[in-house]
Length: 482
Image (tube, rainbow, N blue to C red; front, side, top):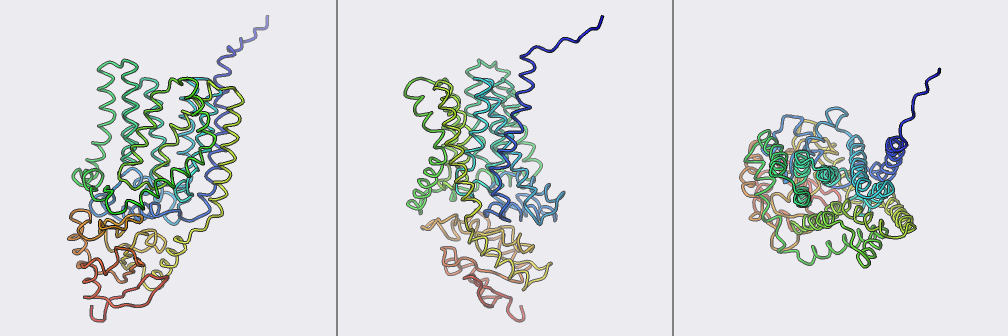
Protein backbone atom coordinates (compact mmCIF):
# COMPACT_ATOMS: atom_id res chain seq x y z
CA UNK A 1 0.00 0.00 0.00
CA UNK A 2 1.33 3.42 -0.97
CA UNK A 3 1.97 5.55 2.08
CA UNK A 4 1.31 9.27 1.61
CA UNK A 5 3.09 11.49 4.14
CA UNK A 6 0.77 13.55 6.22
CA UNK A 7 0.67 17.24 5.38
CA UNK A 8 1.75 19.51 8.21
CA UNK A 9 -1.04 21.23 10.09
CA UNK A 10 -2.35 24.33 8.33
CA UNK A 11 -1.20 26.56 11.21
CA UNK A 12 2.39 25.44 10.63
CA UNK A 13 2.15 26.15 6.90
CA UNK A 14 0.69 29.60 7.54
CA UNK A 15 3.32 30.34 10.18
CA UNK A 16 6.19 29.48 7.82
CA UNK A 17 4.58 31.20 4.84
CA UNK A 18 3.96 34.44 6.70
CA UNK A 19 7.59 35.59 6.72
CA UNK A 20 8.29 34.13 3.30
CA UNK A 21 5.65 36.49 1.92
CA UNK A 22 6.28 39.49 4.16
CA UNK A 23 10.07 39.73 4.12
CA UNK A 24 10.40 40.38 0.35
CA UNK A 25 7.69 43.04 0.54
CA UNK A 26 9.38 44.83 3.42
CA UNK A 27 12.76 44.52 1.69
CA UNK A 28 11.41 46.16 -1.47
CA UNK A 29 9.79 48.90 0.58
CA UNK A 30 13.01 49.49 2.52
CA UNK A 31 14.94 49.81 -0.75
CA UNK A 32 12.41 52.20 -2.27
CA UNK A 33 12.31 54.46 0.77
CA UNK A 34 16.12 54.72 0.76
CA UNK A 35 16.52 55.51 -2.95
CA UNK A 36 17.30 59.22 -2.32
CA UNK A 37 20.20 58.29 -0.04
CA UNK A 38 22.10 57.02 -3.11
CA UNK A 39 21.66 60.13 -5.27
CA UNK A 40 24.14 62.29 -3.31
CA UNK A 41 27.77 61.46 -2.49
CA UNK A 42 27.13 62.79 1.00
CA UNK A 43 24.09 64.07 2.87
CA UNK A 44 25.26 65.91 5.97
CA UNK A 45 28.34 66.73 8.09
CA UNK A 46 27.76 63.72 10.34
CA UNK A 47 28.42 61.39 7.42
CA UNK A 48 31.51 63.41 6.61
CA UNK A 49 32.72 63.28 10.20
CA UNK A 50 32.30 59.51 10.34
CA UNK A 51 34.06 59.04 7.00
CA UNK A 52 37.05 61.13 8.12
CA UNK A 53 37.19 59.33 11.47
CA UNK A 54 37.20 55.97 9.69
CA UNK A 55 40.15 56.99 7.52
CA UNK A 56 42.06 58.29 10.55
CA UNK A 57 41.43 55.04 12.42
CA UNK A 58 42.57 53.01 9.42
CA UNK A 59 45.82 54.98 9.41
CA UNK A 60 46.59 54.11 13.02
CA UNK A 61 44.50 56.64 14.95
CA UNK A 62 43.25 55.80 18.43
CA UNK A 63 39.62 56.47 19.30
CA UNK A 64 39.16 59.09 22.06
CA UNK A 65 42.86 59.90 21.89
CA UNK A 66 43.94 60.98 18.40
CA UNK A 67 40.45 60.52 16.90
CA UNK A 68 37.70 62.17 18.92
CA UNK A 69 33.99 62.87 18.84
CA UNK A 70 31.15 63.16 21.32
CA UNK A 71 29.66 59.88 20.10
CA UNK A 72 30.15 56.22 21.11
CA UNK A 73 32.39 54.04 18.93
CA UNK A 74 30.16 51.49 17.18
CA UNK A 75 29.39 53.56 14.10
CA UNK A 76 32.95 54.85 13.53
CA UNK A 77 34.06 51.22 13.75
CA UNK A 78 31.35 50.18 11.29
CA UNK A 79 32.49 52.84 8.82
CA UNK A 80 36.11 51.77 9.32
CA UNK A 81 35.28 48.12 8.69
CA UNK A 82 33.20 48.94 5.62
CA UNK A 83 35.99 51.09 4.20
CA UNK A 84 38.50 48.30 4.85
CA UNK A 85 36.44 45.94 2.67
CA UNK A 86 35.09 48.25 -0.03
CA UNK A 87 37.45 51.23 0.00
CA UNK A 88 36.90 54.70 1.43
CA UNK A 89 36.07 56.60 -1.73
CA UNK A 90 32.29 56.11 -1.58
CA UNK A 91 29.60 55.85 1.08
CA UNK A 92 27.47 53.52 -1.06
CA UNK A 93 28.37 50.36 0.95
CA UNK A 94 27.45 52.14 4.19
CA UNK A 95 24.19 53.25 2.62
CA UNK A 96 23.42 49.62 1.74
CA UNK A 97 23.97 48.74 5.40
CA UNK A 98 21.56 51.55 6.30
CA UNK A 99 18.90 49.91 4.11
CA UNK A 100 19.48 46.64 5.98
CA UNK A 101 19.24 48.48 9.30
CA UNK A 102 15.88 49.95 8.33
CA UNK A 103 14.69 46.55 7.15
CA UNK A 104 15.78 44.94 10.43
CA UNK A 105 13.88 47.57 12.41
CA UNK A 106 10.75 47.01 10.35
CA UNK A 107 10.96 43.23 10.74
CA UNK A 108 11.38 43.47 14.51
CA UNK A 109 8.42 45.83 14.81
CA UNK A 110 6.35 43.53 12.61
CA UNK A 111 7.24 40.59 14.83
CA UNK A 112 6.27 42.49 17.99
CA UNK A 113 2.94 43.55 16.47
CA UNK A 114 2.17 40.09 15.16
CA UNK A 115 2.86 38.48 18.53
CA UNK A 116 0.65 40.98 20.35
CA UNK A 117 -2.23 41.34 17.96
CA UNK A 118 -2.39 39.49 14.63
CA UNK A 119 -0.72 38.65 11.35
CA UNK A 120 -2.34 41.71 9.78
CA UNK A 121 -0.98 43.89 12.57
CA UNK A 122 2.54 42.65 11.83
CA UNK A 123 2.27 43.63 8.19
CA UNK A 124 0.81 47.00 9.15
CA UNK A 125 3.51 47.83 11.68
CA UNK A 126 6.36 46.97 9.33
CA UNK A 127 4.90 48.94 6.44
CA UNK A 128 3.95 51.98 8.53
CA UNK A 129 7.41 52.21 10.04
CA UNK A 130 9.19 52.19 6.68
CA UNK A 131 6.78 54.71 5.20
CA UNK A 132 7.17 57.19 8.07
CA UNK A 133 10.93 56.65 8.45
CA UNK A 134 11.67 59.10 5.61
CA UNK A 135 9.42 61.80 7.02
CA UNK A 136 12.02 64.47 7.75
CA UNK A 137 14.32 66.76 5.83
CA UNK A 138 16.19 64.39 3.46
CA UNK A 139 19.57 65.34 4.93
CA UNK A 140 18.26 63.97 8.25
CA UNK A 141 16.24 60.98 7.07
CA UNK A 142 18.47 59.70 4.25
CA UNK A 143 21.92 60.04 5.83
CA UNK A 144 23.63 56.86 7.03
CA UNK A 145 24.22 58.17 10.52
CA UNK A 146 23.69 57.35 14.16
CA UNK A 147 19.91 57.16 14.51
CA UNK A 148 19.42 54.85 11.52
CA UNK A 149 21.80 52.28 13.02
CA UNK A 150 20.57 52.83 16.56
CA UNK A 151 16.93 52.01 15.83
CA UNK A 152 17.37 48.27 15.11
CA UNK A 153 18.99 47.99 18.54
CA UNK A 154 16.11 49.76 20.30
CA UNK A 155 13.58 47.61 18.45
CA UNK A 156 15.57 44.49 19.34
CA UNK A 157 15.54 45.51 23.01
CA UNK A 158 11.74 45.70 22.98
CA UNK A 159 11.48 42.47 20.98
CA UNK A 160 13.62 40.61 23.52
CA UNK A 161 11.83 42.13 26.51
CA UNK A 162 8.47 41.15 25.02
CA UNK A 163 9.73 37.56 25.06
CA UNK A 164 11.32 37.86 28.54
CA UNK A 165 14.84 37.37 27.22
CA UNK A 166 16.34 39.79 29.70
CA UNK A 167 20.02 39.22 29.04
CA UNK A 168 19.56 39.75 25.32
CA UNK A 169 17.37 42.78 26.00
CA UNK A 170 20.15 44.31 28.08
CA UNK A 171 22.69 43.64 25.34
CA UNK A 172 20.42 45.33 22.79
CA UNK A 173 20.09 48.36 25.09
CA UNK A 174 23.89 48.47 25.33
CA UNK A 175 24.22 48.33 21.53
CA UNK A 176 21.74 51.18 21.19
CA UNK A 177 23.70 53.26 23.72
CA UNK A 178 27.02 52.43 22.05
CA UNK A 179 25.64 53.63 18.73
CA UNK A 180 24.27 56.86 20.19
CA UNK A 181 23.88 57.72 23.86
CA UNK A 182 20.18 58.54 23.63
CA UNK A 183 19.50 55.00 22.45
CA UNK A 184 19.77 54.01 26.10
CA UNK A 185 16.33 55.57 26.65
CA UNK A 186 14.76 52.28 25.57
CA UNK A 187 15.86 50.86 28.93
CA UNK A 188 12.80 52.50 30.55
CA UNK A 189 10.12 50.54 28.63
CA UNK A 190 12.27 47.40 28.98
CA UNK A 191 12.26 47.85 32.76
CA UNK A 192 8.51 48.41 32.64
CA UNK A 193 8.01 45.10 30.85
CA UNK A 194 10.29 43.37 33.34
CA UNK A 195 8.12 44.67 36.18
CA UNK A 196 4.85 43.90 34.39
CA UNK A 197 5.85 40.34 33.68
CA UNK A 198 6.87 39.91 37.29
CA UNK A 199 10.43 39.12 36.30
CA UNK A 200 12.35 37.47 39.11
CA UNK A 201 15.45 38.97 40.62
CA UNK A 202 17.49 36.85 38.26
CA UNK A 203 15.83 38.59 35.33
CA UNK A 204 16.94 41.99 36.60
CA UNK A 205 20.47 40.69 37.10
CA UNK A 206 20.56 39.31 33.57
CA UNK A 207 19.26 42.60 32.20
CA UNK A 208 21.86 44.58 34.13
CA UNK A 209 24.67 42.27 33.08
CA UNK A 210 23.57 42.32 29.46
CA UNK A 211 23.54 46.13 29.47
CA UNK A 212 26.72 46.74 31.47
CA UNK A 213 29.18 44.19 30.09
CA UNK A 214 29.24 45.40 26.46
CA UNK A 215 29.66 49.02 27.58
CA UNK A 216 32.48 48.04 29.93
CA UNK A 217 34.13 45.97 27.22
CA UNK A 218 34.02 48.83 24.71
CA UNK A 219 35.40 51.26 27.30
CA UNK A 220 38.33 48.93 27.95
CA UNK A 221 38.88 48.39 24.22
CA UNK A 222 39.30 52.13 23.69
CA UNK A 223 40.47 54.40 26.51
CA UNK A 224 38.21 54.18 29.60
CA UNK A 225 38.82 57.74 30.75
CA UNK A 226 38.54 59.12 27.22
CA UNK A 227 35.43 57.05 26.52
CA UNK A 228 33.71 58.38 29.66
CA UNK A 229 34.76 61.96 28.94
CA UNK A 230 33.80 62.14 25.28
CA UNK A 231 30.54 60.19 25.52
CA UNK A 232 29.17 61.31 28.90
CA UNK A 233 30.93 63.94 30.99
CA UNK A 234 32.59 66.30 28.53
CA UNK A 235 29.61 67.95 26.80
CA UNK A 236 28.12 70.22 29.44
CA UNK A 237 28.39 73.44 27.43
CA UNK A 238 27.17 71.71 24.26
CA UNK A 239 23.99 70.63 26.03
CA UNK A 240 23.20 74.12 27.31
CA UNK A 241 20.03 75.87 26.10
CA UNK A 242 21.48 79.30 26.85
CA UNK A 243 22.40 81.59 23.99
CA UNK A 244 20.22 80.36 21.12
CA UNK A 245 16.74 80.01 22.57
CA UNK A 246 14.74 81.38 19.64
CA UNK A 247 16.82 79.52 17.07
CA UNK A 248 16.49 76.23 18.93
CA UNK A 249 12.76 76.73 19.53
CA UNK A 250 12.19 77.41 15.84
CA UNK A 251 14.13 74.27 14.90
CA UNK A 252 12.17 72.17 17.41
CA UNK A 253 8.81 73.42 16.11
CA UNK A 254 9.84 73.03 12.47
CA UNK A 255 11.03 69.45 12.81
CA UNK A 256 8.03 68.52 14.95
CA UNK A 257 5.75 69.91 12.24
CA UNK A 258 7.60 68.03 9.49
CA UNK A 259 7.38 64.71 11.35
CA UNK A 260 3.74 65.46 12.20
CA UNK A 261 2.98 65.92 8.51
CA UNK A 262 4.85 62.70 7.70
CA UNK A 263 2.74 60.92 10.31
CA UNK A 264 -0.55 61.94 8.70
CA UNK A 265 -1.54 58.30 8.40
CA UNK A 266 -0.49 57.38 11.96
CA UNK A 267 -1.74 60.18 14.20
CA UNK A 268 -5.50 60.12 13.35
CA UNK A 269 -6.01 56.46 14.40
CA UNK A 270 -3.99 57.04 17.56
CA UNK A 271 -6.10 60.06 18.51
CA UNK A 272 -9.35 58.31 17.60
CA UNK A 273 -8.44 55.20 19.58
CA UNK A 274 -7.60 57.31 22.62
CA UNK A 275 -11.08 58.81 22.47
CA UNK A 276 -12.98 55.53 22.38
CA UNK A 277 -10.91 52.90 24.18
CA UNK A 278 -7.65 51.97 25.81
CA UNK A 279 -5.16 50.23 23.57
CA UNK A 280 -3.33 48.36 26.36
CA UNK A 281 0.01 49.61 25.12
CA UNK A 282 1.46 51.32 28.19
CA UNK A 283 4.98 50.13 27.37
CA UNK A 284 4.72 51.65 23.90
CA UNK A 285 3.60 54.98 25.33
CA UNK A 286 6.54 54.84 27.74
CA UNK A 287 8.84 54.06 24.81
CA UNK A 288 7.50 57.09 22.95
CA UNK A 289 7.82 59.31 26.02
CA UNK A 290 11.38 58.15 26.74
CA UNK A 291 12.27 58.76 23.09
CA UNK A 292 10.78 62.26 23.26
CA UNK A 293 12.93 63.02 26.30
CA UNK A 294 15.95 61.71 24.38
CA UNK A 295 15.14 64.05 21.48
CA UNK A 296 15.02 66.95 23.94
CA UNK A 297 18.34 66.20 25.66
CA UNK A 298 20.99 68.70 24.66
CA UNK A 299 18.41 71.23 23.44
CA UNK A 300 19.47 71.07 19.80
CA UNK A 301 16.47 69.35 18.17
CA UNK A 302 18.24 68.43 14.95
CA UNK A 303 15.92 66.67 12.54
CA UNK A 304 17.67 63.31 12.67
CA UNK A 305 17.04 63.21 16.45
CA UNK A 306 13.32 62.82 15.68
CA UNK A 307 13.88 59.48 13.93
CA UNK A 308 13.95 57.92 17.40
CA UNK A 309 10.21 58.61 17.69
CA UNK A 310 9.22 56.65 14.60
CA UNK A 311 9.31 53.01 15.86
CA UNK A 312 7.01 53.58 18.87
CA UNK A 313 4.74 55.78 16.73
CA UNK A 314 4.37 52.97 14.18
CA UNK A 315 3.52 50.43 16.87
CA UNK A 316 1.08 52.78 18.64
CA UNK A 317 -0.72 53.42 15.36
CA UNK A 318 -0.87 49.67 14.75
CA UNK A 319 -2.28 49.11 18.25
CA UNK A 320 -4.93 51.77 17.66
CA UNK A 321 -5.94 50.25 14.33
CA UNK A 322 -6.72 46.94 16.02
CA UNK A 323 -9.79 48.44 17.70
CA UNK A 324 -10.95 50.49 14.71
CA UNK A 325 -12.86 49.31 11.62
CA UNK A 326 -10.71 47.36 9.17
CA UNK A 327 -10.96 50.02 6.47
CA UNK A 328 -9.11 52.43 8.75
CA UNK A 329 -5.97 50.33 8.30
CA UNK A 330 -6.10 50.68 4.52
CA UNK A 331 -6.67 54.41 4.86
CA UNK A 332 -3.70 54.78 7.24
CA UNK A 333 -1.34 52.87 4.96
CA UNK A 334 -2.54 54.75 1.86
CA UNK A 335 -2.13 58.14 3.52
CA UNK A 336 1.34 57.17 4.74
CA UNK A 337 2.32 55.96 1.26
CA UNK A 338 1.20 59.23 -0.35
CA UNK A 339 3.11 61.34 2.17
CA UNK A 340 6.13 59.06 1.79
CA UNK A 341 6.09 59.64 -1.97
CA UNK A 342 6.24 63.40 -1.38
CA UNK A 343 9.25 63.06 0.92
CA UNK A 344 11.01 60.77 -1.55
CA UNK A 345 10.45 63.34 -4.31
CA UNK A 346 11.88 66.01 -2.01
CA UNK A 347 14.89 63.81 -1.36
CA UNK A 348 15.60 63.21 -5.04
CA UNK A 349 15.09 66.80 -6.22
CA UNK A 350 16.21 68.95 -3.28
CA UNK A 351 19.40 70.95 -3.93
CA UNK A 352 22.36 70.63 -1.54
CA UNK A 353 24.22 73.96 -1.69
CA UNK A 354 26.45 73.15 1.29
CA UNK A 355 27.62 69.96 -0.42
CA UNK A 356 28.52 71.95 -3.52
CA UNK A 357 30.45 74.38 -1.31
CA UNK A 358 32.37 71.56 0.37
CA UNK A 359 33.16 70.06 -3.04
CA UNK A 360 34.62 73.35 -4.24
CA UNK A 361 36.78 73.61 -1.12
CA UNK A 362 37.91 70.01 -1.60
CA UNK A 363 38.91 70.77 -5.20
CA UNK A 364 40.97 73.70 -3.92
CA UNK A 365 42.69 71.47 -1.37
CA UNK A 366 43.44 68.93 -4.06
CA UNK A 367 44.99 71.54 -6.34
CA UNK A 368 47.03 73.41 -3.75
CA UNK A 369 48.34 70.57 -1.57
CA UNK A 370 49.91 67.17 -2.00
CA UNK A 371 48.49 63.82 -0.83
CA UNK A 372 50.88 63.76 2.13
CA UNK A 373 50.15 67.31 3.34
CA UNK A 374 48.15 68.00 6.46
CA UNK A 375 45.50 70.71 6.20
CA UNK A 376 43.14 72.58 8.49
CA UNK A 377 39.56 73.41 7.54
CA UNK A 378 38.25 75.80 10.20
CA UNK A 379 34.51 75.23 9.92
CA UNK A 380 31.72 72.75 10.54
CA UNK A 381 32.03 70.72 7.34
CA UNK A 382 34.49 67.88 8.00
CA UNK A 383 33.36 66.23 4.79
CA UNK A 384 35.81 68.56 3.01
CA UNK A 385 38.70 66.44 4.32
CA UNK A 386 37.06 63.26 3.03
CA UNK A 387 36.15 64.70 -0.36
CA UNK A 388 39.73 65.96 -0.86
CA UNK A 389 41.35 62.86 0.67
CA UNK A 390 43.59 65.03 2.84
CA UNK A 391 44.74 64.36 6.40
CA UNK A 392 43.39 66.75 9.04
CA UNK A 393 46.06 68.68 10.92
CA UNK A 394 44.15 68.17 14.17
CA UNK A 395 42.04 65.55 15.90
CA UNK A 396 39.27 68.16 16.24
CA UNK A 397 37.47 67.87 12.93
CA UNK A 398 35.13 70.83 13.41
CA UNK A 399 35.44 74.26 14.94
CA UNK A 400 32.48 73.31 17.11
CA UNK A 401 34.62 71.25 19.46
CA UNK A 402 36.91 74.26 19.97
CA UNK A 403 34.22 76.96 20.22
CA UNK A 404 30.94 75.20 21.14
CA UNK A 405 29.35 76.33 17.89
CA UNK A 406 26.80 73.82 16.66
CA UNK A 407 24.22 74.15 13.95
CA UNK A 408 23.46 77.84 14.40
CA UNK A 409 24.16 78.44 18.08
CA UNK A 410 24.59 82.18 17.81
CA UNK A 411 24.58 83.56 21.33
CA UNK A 412 27.18 84.21 24.01
CA UNK A 413 27.95 80.52 24.46
CA UNK A 414 30.36 80.48 21.48
CA UNK A 415 34.08 81.08 21.95
CA UNK A 416 37.33 79.57 23.21
CA UNK A 417 36.23 79.44 26.82
CA UNK A 418 33.21 77.31 25.88
CA UNK A 419 35.31 74.69 24.06
CA UNK A 420 35.46 71.08 25.21
CA UNK A 421 37.70 71.10 28.26
CA UNK A 422 41.39 70.63 27.46
CA UNK A 423 41.10 70.94 23.70
CA UNK A 424 42.97 74.20 23.10
CA UNK A 425 46.32 73.15 24.64
CA UNK A 426 46.19 69.99 22.52
CA UNK A 427 45.25 71.97 19.41
CA UNK A 428 48.11 74.42 19.90
CA UNK A 429 50.56 71.53 20.36
CA UNK A 430 49.31 69.90 17.15
CA UNK A 431 49.74 73.12 15.20
CA UNK A 432 53.26 73.62 16.60
CA UNK A 433 54.32 70.01 16.02
CA UNK A 434 53.36 69.91 12.36
CA UNK A 435 51.84 73.08 10.97
CA UNK A 436 49.24 72.55 8.23
CA UNK A 437 50.33 73.34 4.69
CA UNK A 438 47.05 75.15 4.02
CA UNK A 439 44.39 76.61 6.31
CA UNK A 440 40.88 77.32 5.09
CA UNK A 441 38.84 79.68 7.26
CA UNK A 442 35.34 78.53 6.37
CA UNK A 443 33.58 80.53 9.11
CA UNK A 444 31.97 82.90 6.55
CA UNK A 445 30.73 85.37 9.14
CA UNK A 446 29.75 82.80 11.74
CA UNK A 447 30.51 83.56 15.41
CA UNK A 448 33.53 81.22 15.47
CA UNK A 449 35.56 83.22 12.96
CA UNK A 450 39.20 84.18 13.72
CA UNK A 451 38.12 87.69 14.76
CA UNK A 452 36.36 86.09 17.75
CA UNK A 453 38.90 83.33 18.46
CA UNK A 454 42.15 84.96 19.67
CA UNK A 455 44.27 81.79 19.64
CA UNK A 456 43.43 81.04 16.03
CA UNK A 457 43.96 84.67 15.05
CA UNK A 458 47.43 84.65 16.63
CA UNK A 459 48.27 81.36 14.93
CA UNK A 460 47.39 82.75 11.50
CA UNK A 461 49.16 86.07 12.12
CA UNK A 462 52.37 84.36 13.25
CA UNK A 463 52.88 81.93 10.40
CA UNK A 464 50.43 82.42 7.53
CA UNK A 465 49.39 84.88 4.88
CA UNK A 466 46.18 85.16 2.91
CA UNK A 467 46.16 83.50 -0.49
CA UNK A 468 42.71 84.24 -1.85
CA UNK A 469 39.09 83.18 -1.31
CA UNK A 470 36.87 80.37 -2.49
CA UNK A 471 33.12 80.71 -2.11
CA UNK A 472 33.58 83.10 0.82
CA UNK A 473 36.13 80.88 2.58
CA UNK A 474 39.54 82.48 3.11
CA UNK A 475 42.72 80.58 2.22
CA UNK A 476 45.93 80.87 4.22
CA UNK A 477 49.30 79.47 3.18
CA UNK A 478 52.50 79.38 5.23
CA UNK A 479 54.44 82.59 5.07
CA UNK A 480 57.90 82.49 3.41
CA UNK A 481 60.49 81.18 5.86
CA UNK A 482 57.95 79.39 8.06
